[in-house]
View 1 (cartoon, rainbow, N blue to C red):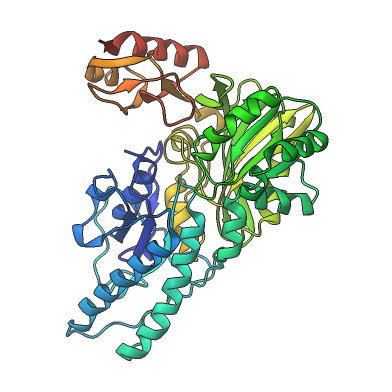
View 2 (cartoon, helix red, strand yellow; view 1 turned 90 degrees about the vertical axis):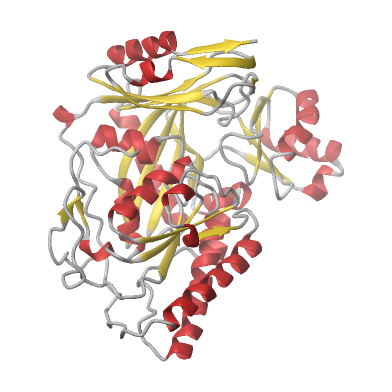
Length: 492
């Protein structure tokens, strides 16, 4: 479930329209929910037919395909669109012509309705046709932005031909400047992203690419990397993984040589990047971008533990240990990186490292964050609805749900990782009681009896996560302590 401290009005201009969401996992559930609140025709593409988001949509709207393989995803979408067109061609009632080309800066036609009111009737629904064809593709919380870009371009070419076939002018798409495929690849490939940022003199760690052909002559490559980066420690990363998978702090040459295969296992492209290590606090920042205007609405302080790995064991809003000036500098660098990546409409998430008085871009991606931030903690802390906002800008509409609560009305919201230990799980008890503790907004358990827990090496190796809302950080921490005392992970 996603959370909104204040009731946001549904946007009538989203009602009944068709959207394809890449990924049906837990991080995409808030987006799917918000689209369904608008009575949208929600389609989902995912390899996992049992993903929680897939269970929310009609079976015929699910595309069972790998989202990591862009060509397979494209072919699967084309087959799905052919079936959708076939359904339309059997309809006998006329298709109402509507103008879908709304400009981002045009004023809303009305103030909408709240999520608790009934959907608009067909007679009063603006900008809806009887077909409800897929108009755009988007994602949140995944690094498959290149897949999103390819599928958006596939929609354009398919509908251009389909419009001729059915002799209708209704298969229009929103007038939105989506990321091109090339731009999306740049934003999701850590080496290409860093090279682009370097062209714009944006502060970032020094980096050295380790491509497959270079790894074959690794000893010479390591010498070159050491000469360029300077003294250890470094950070080793796959160029195309998320969730800190394959990311490791490297203390010396021996550790580097031993860690290459470990990190390569998480890279589909079999390419790594080596970066200088920067000490200091770390921020996560989310933004919605509408026609070039950047709305920064989620800023969280991250807690990173379990060296030599980089496991996020929690994040908090507001930032308790970072000054307003540091946050201002971080936002400025983040906005520069957004412009450098040419993200004109859509979303961006950044991990910003504060070190030595400078804000460095650790990561930036053309999407909203995962990690329970964009769909949960931001909504609870600020009262904004990032899910409706990303839907709105993706349909060329002005975002209407980004006005934050007054500071006096904001609470301290934290996401905490559940890490009870290691070993084979015999029993998990106390879940219902833990969920009932006042202040617990939600609790997610990712394991079951018979699973084996290991010491975490990335953000996917956790027993669960809990989201807590309280008046102060001390109270939030006390509630988290109660959760850990109430939950019982019993090992064999």
